[in-house]
Image (cartoon, rainbow, N blue to C red; front, side):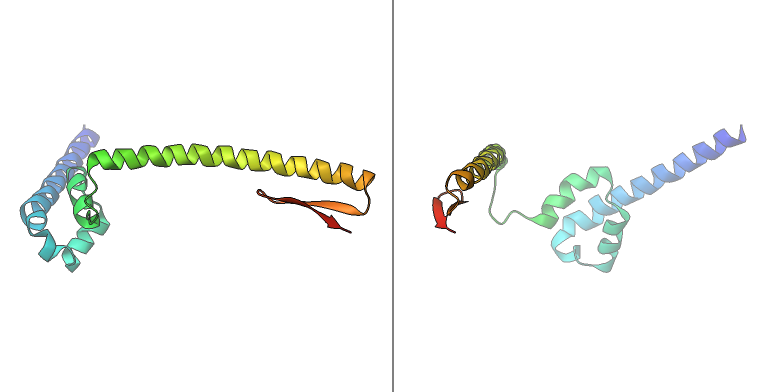
Length: 130
């Protein structure tokens, strides 16, 4: 019984605190964001953690959008980034296979032609006289 009462009291205190924070952010800080964003009080509140309802509004205000990136453009860039990442992974796999092939060629070549060694990079393969 006492434990239940203590939990209910704690929940009421937390709910009141959340409501006060939301009221402060929505009623005082966000409407005057440009003036108040660097104030010690706002910085302190931010470090305490933004209430969930406030996060979606405050982060865009804090970060800004100097390049005027729309939601659609953001999704296009995201898709391009995913495509580039996949291509990069494939490129690294191909590069790894090329280096393995060069190592095998080097090993075989040094047995057949002891005076030469392969030197390989992605774009070029050349013989170096030993």
